[in-house]
Image: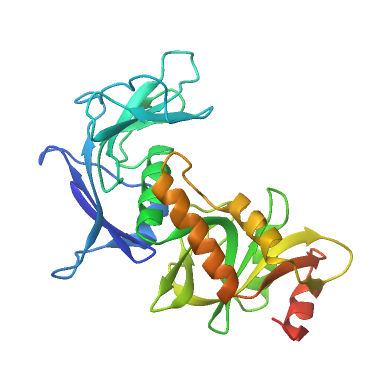
Length: 295
């Protein structure tokens, strides 16, 4: 393909090859989010141009990066209106620039480069470039990605979150065996739709590859604690805000996005029931929740 449209959390993204004769593929995780063609007048949240690996290279980061991790850096380049994203290579070469991004993340030029060796890729979107750009743009347009599992049961959406190993995939599978639909076992997006908090899938799953690109009202948010009992415990709002913040994909390199994320989380906790969920990793937790008066 040399043109593709993705719709994630209701936001439309446009991908196109820099050269009409060039082509790119997309990783299979994006298949449920592909859209044949947008409706007339449909707003495009982001438009991204794909360059072949050797055909183009972004300007390197100038000065101290705005963000630095073990995998990637983001910083200003010679163009005052643009940022450069670079990835660190496993073979100790200098960081490789892979994307030039507008400051609002609505536009970008992406190099078809993948992995810790910065090798050529057939895919137009590759980690970490895809997640950095798309998650930031989603947030700047009102959709926040959370490191959480999401399920839908009888038309209602529920989120379960906690640190790695807390049991997100486990509880997702338990619910799936009990008739619920798995939205995503690792990354979901939340946003307000006509004043109603809504949960939906993102392409970025965890251990369970099942992803259902559905949008449902959010009815509960639960922090997972493995225990020998199953119960929901109320938590002061300030404590729950701190816990949710720790699992939110917040781009701290963008002040506007940070402000938006915190405002969204505060609003969500006012509108949606939330608490600690102590649970045993077996079917009993589902039965206990279905009997609970606050579920």
